[in-house]
Image 1: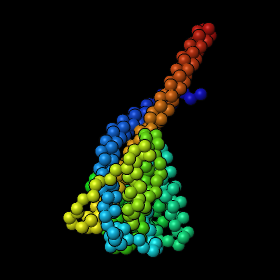
Image 2: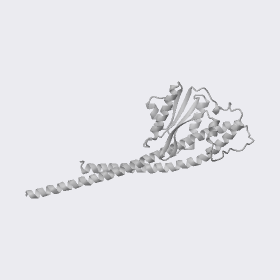
Image 3: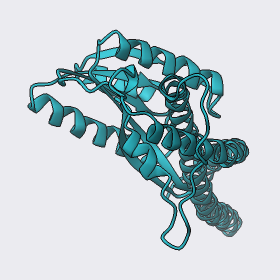
Image 4: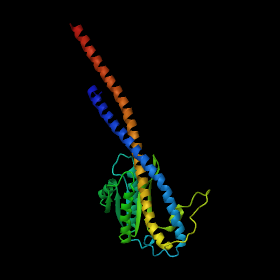
Length: 296
């Protein structure tokens, strides 16, 4: 059995670890509340924008001249992967990166040139460690999903697509379900699809699908559609960033809660062992004293 001094050192170490995990849990919980507030408020805006785009698409006869809707022969693809900058969040990063790697290998097997755009240090480290091509990295984004970050990323991706560096752009992120549930998701961002936008706005079967009424547009619907598609593209990226951050904080809060609980249980075991070791040492000292007295 370990001596009482060694057990005491272990108790102090576990107590320090428990304080850290407990603090990280509280920080993640605070950030999660902020991100969830953004997630809820953004849903309304995204829904109305989608409805407007669906209405516009019905009034545009020719969409072939809209750059973000242009469908090309696919020879080059960009995969945008949103991960955390730090670990200690359970399998949050691992599960997403595993699915992103499977997607990468699937496209490479078809002979398509594919580049990674990493959003988060964990994504960059993962692909570079495997010798895969990382075309661009964004490592200093906020961990609560700021609008400025979405604008920076959307402008970079839109420019790359319009300059025909990529024929398709996909986005991999953790879709937020709940604090304990995140789903690795890969969607196509560009070229955009009016059909996909309309599908997003189909409500439950028990409700009536409502679109905006027909308006007289000024300027022409095609020009408005082109402008709003760029805005919708940014909103989709912002939504993915917010969901990813919500999932990250939820996963970290869950992981740190479990670590804190484990530390509490370990402390109880160590304190029991310490008391037993201390009692054994006292008993041994008493025995030695009695033996010494008897020897006299």
